[in-house]
Structures are given as structure tokens and as C-alpha cells.
Image (cartoon, rainbow, N blue to C red; front, side, top):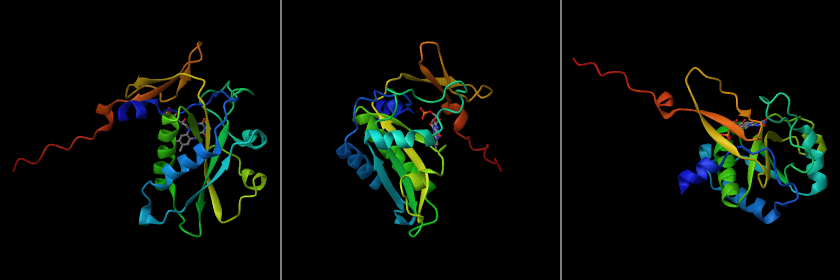
Length: 195
Ligand SMILES: Cc1cc2nc3c(=O)[nH]c(=O)nc-3n(C[C@H](O)[C@H](O)[C@H](O)COP(=O)(O)O)c2cc1C
């Protein structure tokens, strides 16, 4: 069950835009984020929710999608996210939040999958988001999470040690994402000194 949830929690970039993501759902996902571990238990992460069509339209132009798919400029109108969570670091509480961010956003992504939703972390965003959404200066923008009901199939592929890490799309629009093997990422202890 946990394994299926983890495997299904992929990065999705095309959505049924007409399916709303409700504020209650977003609050629940942020509640999952809140329960994640935090260095020094400082809990410096804050979140801004967007899920109204007009706000989503304001956010979309500031985001960079799937850098490896050079020909693709991001989801078309009709396949765009129904919600966003802007992940913020409250610098009055801590100057470092990257580990917390990974934990928090994975909780959100797992929770989204369980709700029949999906999303994508977007680190490629314009700093103009700050002005557009009047984000105060003590809140550093770390990441934007795009969310919606996924409208694409994502398949995990085997990545050999010498092959390309780039994801790709086939003509049927299936998204393929290569992952390193377990054998490659487990570092073996060197043979103990027999003396
Ligand atoms: C910290 C972080 C930043 C990312 N930024 C972007 C981004 O700016 N644009 C994008 O389309 N995908 C982004 N992604 C999604 C990755 O491309 C994706 O995680 C990777 O291809 C592996 O696919 P998977 O999430 O389905 O395992 C980001 C992922 C992470 C973890």
C-alpha cells in the first residue's frame, strides 16, 4: 500500500483543469506538511494557497515547465493546474529550510495522490511572484507546488549507470522518468581489514 502510494506519487504536469482543488483539500495537505520533521523544530515554512481561476492564471506565466522537454512550453489552457501552494521560508524563524521543504512537500505530494490529485514541484519560477502576490519580504519563496487532477500517464523506467537522466515523452504522450537502480545507489562498505 505504501509502496503503491510512493510509486504513484510522480511529477504530473498536465491536469483536468476543470476539476477544482478545494480549499479544504489544500488545508489538509498543508496539515500533512506541518507534521513533517523540522531541523531544530524551528518550523520555518509557511504556505500561500491559490485555487481561484483568476489567481491560477496570474501564477502560470511565472513558472518553468519540464526543462528537458525543449519543444514543450508547459501545459495548454485546459490542462493547467487547478491550484498552487507557494512554499515560503519565514526568515525571521530560520535562514535554512531546504531539508524541511523536501519533507513537507513530499507529505503534500503523497497526500495529494491519496486524494486522487497530483502535482509538480516548480523551482524554476520568476521572482516576480513576490510582487504579483504581495508576499512580504521576510518570506523567502522556496518553491511553487502545482496541483490538480492528473491528465497524464507517467511511467518509471530503469536508468543504467551510463545512460541519460533526462525524462522523455513518447508519441502517445506518456511521460517516462528514468530512475537509478537500487544496486547503483547503495554504497557498499569496503572489505573489512582482516588483521
Ligand atoms: C526540488 C525540485 C524542483 C523541481 N523543479 C521543477 C521545475 O521547475 N519544473 C518542472 O517541470 N519540474 C520540476 N521538478 C520535477 C522534477 O523534474 C521531477 O521530480 C523529476 O523529473 C523526477 O520525476 P518524478 O518526480 O516523477 O520522480 C522539480 C523537482 C524537485 C524535487
